[in-house]
Image 1: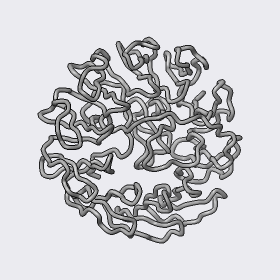
Image 2: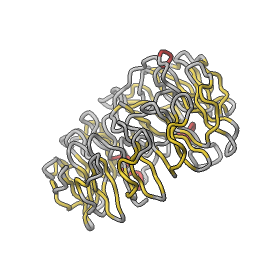
Image 3: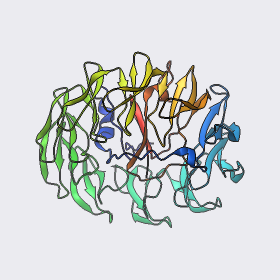
Image 4: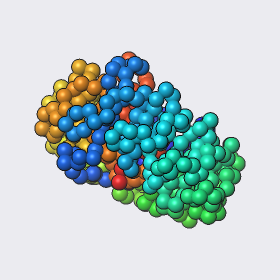
Amino acid sequence: MRKTTVLIITIVILTAAVSTFTYLLLNRKNVKMIGTADFLGNTDAFAVVYLGGEFVGKYGYIDKTGKYVINPQFDDAKPFKDGFAAVEVSSKWGYIDKAGKYVINPQFDNAEPFNDGLALVEVARKWGYIDKTGKYVINPQFDYAEAFDGDLASVGLGHKYGAHIDRTGKYVINPQFDNARGDFEEGLAAVKGGNNWGYIDKTGKYAINPQFDDAFAFGDGLAFVKVGGKLGVIDKAGKYVVNPQFDDAGGFVDGLARVKLDDKWGFIDKTGQYAINPQFDNVDSFVNDLAMVKLGGKYGYIDRSGKYVINPQFDAAAPFVSNITCTKSGDKWGYIDKTGTYTINPQFEAASTFYKGLAVVVIGGKFGYIDSKGQFVINPQFDYALPPFDGITWGSRETLFYVPRDITRKKDANTVVGFYKPKEVWTEGRHGAWIFSH
């Protein structure tokens, strides 16, 4: 697939900047904390687990007690959404209900979760949309397609992108652009015509004519664009608010944006003035008023004035998506609070942040679930396990959790082996990944 976008909110990658990550760094939407509502009270939430060893194991589903509600039997499986889950058997995908019964028999080459009554499926390298009876609402015909965001979905056909269809499959915007950045953000979408990027509105008309070497999603009314190898900031009229001058950058989040100049990262405000001077080897956007930073190979956290709240001291870390987060010291992961004090001592081989009161951890190569006190709610026993939530919602703007690279990659390989990766809601980089939901 030729398309260059990563569609939904992008993660911050706390590593040396690499050009292939530019889009990830520039297109992450506003991040908010999800309240830690108690998953243990949600009887509908099932977690996907894997058991049986690499390449020969099977996927199934457990409930809040760790009991199998659907025994491991699938070659691949995705979380439940709208009451159904996509599962793979013998290289074909179908859908099951929460009793494990097929509601749509395996027949597709690929399948995505249902969203507002429709699901994306792939047959013979073409994508279409089905309803919950398995009937095609929009026949497979697209080389690329996304889930509907409201009444529109972005699709690609041949070597043309930026097309949008309505729920009947009718083109609202015809395929005509050489590249595109996915869905509309704040009413505008970045598209490439010829050698230059510009922005269109929802009628397909240019709101900002193609003139940039690259262009990224709007956020807080502003967007980064690239000209002559440097990044600057424009408003929705296409006027420069900040002239191109940065080597790399990240989108505006709550009034601040990450920028890189001469190998150091800092933050600017919406006028282009430095709020925090470039001084770090890498930075994350602010999440709950703290930003994760890297300096001298160690991770710490700063407040919005640039003052250290927790000095750089960790070998790896995750943002504070709740009041505690996971950090790595040596080869073990533990959990700290916002003062930097350990609430759960380092002891895990890998760990995720908490979601709805639970986190996924690894001990002895097995995945299990702990509560915020560090007690096992479900003992380590799985070859990998997903966080316990009932599906993922497309087009969202809030963080579910952050998964550091240790839990998503094998120690001896550079391949993802854990955690569901839906087309549009999983975003990842070299140090971790975000999953999002409403």
